Length: 327
Image (cartoon, rainbow, N blue to C red; front, side, top):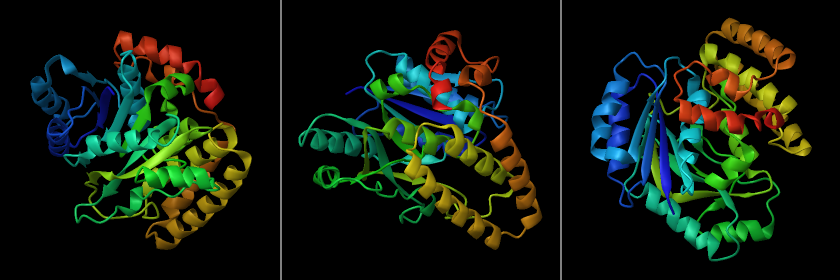
């Protein structure tokens, strides 16, 4: 199995250095590495270039000229990764993700155990995400797949994991052939829910596995959950959730109903805990308006003129044809 890691960076140079050093120290080496810098102004690109010297031709730095958000950064990095024909898995992560030494080997071992019990139909794997205290991070705790069959649960358990329906980009393994069939993350999401929509899209009609034996540390400032007060970013939560429920083919109809109800409960908790509800109301109003009146632009449109290299942009344009079906 050939694994290409994709790391998206933005203005966290010291955490970026730590993450890159952890990737270099994997007990099962990463075959290739793509780092996408989202137009950082704190020297992150320079840090990446310095650390990547030890990787030689196995690594590539893509410094963008505009901040395209996590969604645009991951779309760029994934496109660069799957341009290599021999890649089997694309391992995506943020620059505040520090993988444990066996994060990659643990995921590949689970994949091997899963294949031993049936056909090789895994599309996505997700790591166990902990905070700096070693406990599970509430922001990235996966949930079991709703209405998974007994066979699905049994296969996942035999592989040492759990059947899932979506996963965050904090540490996710994406099967390259599935990416080529389903396209890229929708860059116009900018941030929030891009990983939910994309992983659910990859997993519709395919299998996903949470792997506790693959451990990463998510070094957020606080050990908060998704209900924590998001401030102005709540706009993206509202707009993008509406885009998922209205336009995406990632979820079945009955799933959209369940997730809509869960989202309403989460928003209620967010408002209840907020110290600035006026700001959240403004984000809700604008996000609701744009979520209903607009549709995402294609990833090709979003990434044009942002510094994406020509060879990567060719891959983006090819896969962007699938965007219109995804959104």
